[in-house]
Image (tube, rainbow, N blue to C red; front, side, top):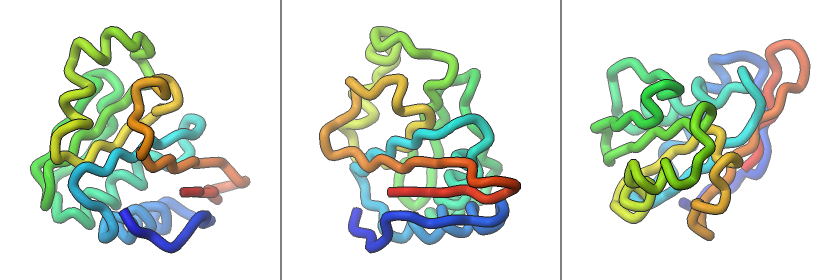
Length: 139
């Protein structure tokens, strides 16, 4: 992925969505995005924007309970949520390495919970609350 920004501030969910959509234009097959940030910091909204930018037209929800969602977008997109499952062996058993070693775009929420499994060349995106509806988003 080639992108020219390091940090952004959004003032509402629409801007967060749009920023995700903008970022999607720089994504390439094989990219692994590691999203970190507290609850309700905009991660899922950002992912919804990325998938819209990748021409995915159906609803996008966080796979908090299913752990993994697969989307047939412009490129295959794998959406992983580590919030409820921190056991590294469990992630290995469900095929985590297969997902990141294929030509998928892999987006991982709560990636800090499985940081030792992430490839060295992953892209970290950090989300922070900055008061009211403001979000800081740093690549």
